Amino acid sequence: MKKIIPVILLLAAIGGGLWYYFDRIKPAHEPLQLHGNVDIRGVDLGFRVSGRVVEVLKDEGDVVKAGDILARIDQEPYQRALEQAKAALASAEAQARLKKAGYRPEEIEQARATLAQNRVAADNAERAYRRQADLVKQSSVSKQDYENAEAARNEAIQRVRLAEANLNQLEAGYRQEEIDAANAAVDQAKATVGTAQIQLADTVLKSPSDAVLITRAVESGAIVQAGATVLSLSLEKPVWVRAYVSEPDLGKFPPGTKVELFTDGKPDHAYKGTVGFVAPSAEFTPKSVETKELRTSLVYRMRVVVEDSDGSLRQGMPVTLRLSNIPEK
Image 1: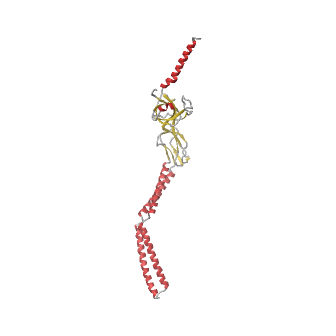
Image 2: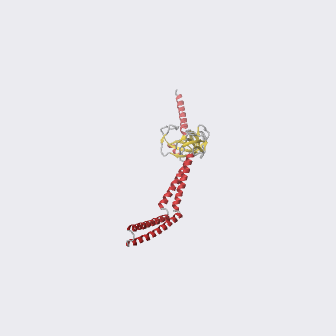
Image 3: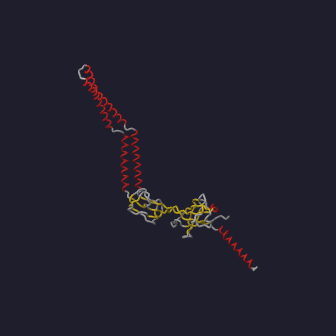
């Protein structure tokens, strides 16, 4: 028994040394690894105008490029609205030109002729009035004839004044306020045309970026309201990996740090990534993250931008991040 005890102690010492080596010393020389998940942005697309869907060009699973036409709604109502807006603009512009140019020369010449005619009539009425005034003094005419001549003279004078005012108005042209109002009407009509053009363009639904179509929510013939989801896309770029790093290793991952990423499906294929964001505050480790630390440990969230995604990375896919060439302490 006494001989066995030293052997047991020796084996325990060897085991403790091995445990210390593999658990403390050796891991310090292994590349640092973090665990995270792929985070791919998605977008729900819809028309900004309502109408009847006439064509859906893509189906679920199709790869689309930025600017590809995905669907259309009936353009005819919006085309008619645009034509009506353009006609209103043309009318407003014509009114603005009319106000700026003033009255026609023919109208001014006609007003001058009317003024001259009224002046001649006023002269005749003045002479008739004076004759009647002389005769009424001699009691050669009745007072009624005198009063009629006086009224005719006054009426002729007022007609001259009216003709003069009309001529002055025509020669001066339109008031500045009228011209400003006409110009404002043109601006309003232009805005209406612009709105109609935007609405017509919005009848065509285009892809905002390279993506994969994952949901086709409507079919041709459906009536859709503005803003309703028609198609859903999974964007190819950017592809991010959301990972968490503990406080002791935080200094090893400043923004701009290059990392390698591995998936379970391609364990031998290394994707290239760059740390783009590190959270300024700590949080508790999410339950979905697999780390050797306790789940109640405080960690910092960081985002890694994948530089060479080949389309095989999917939303939520677990990823291992590896940072090689760690300087030894």
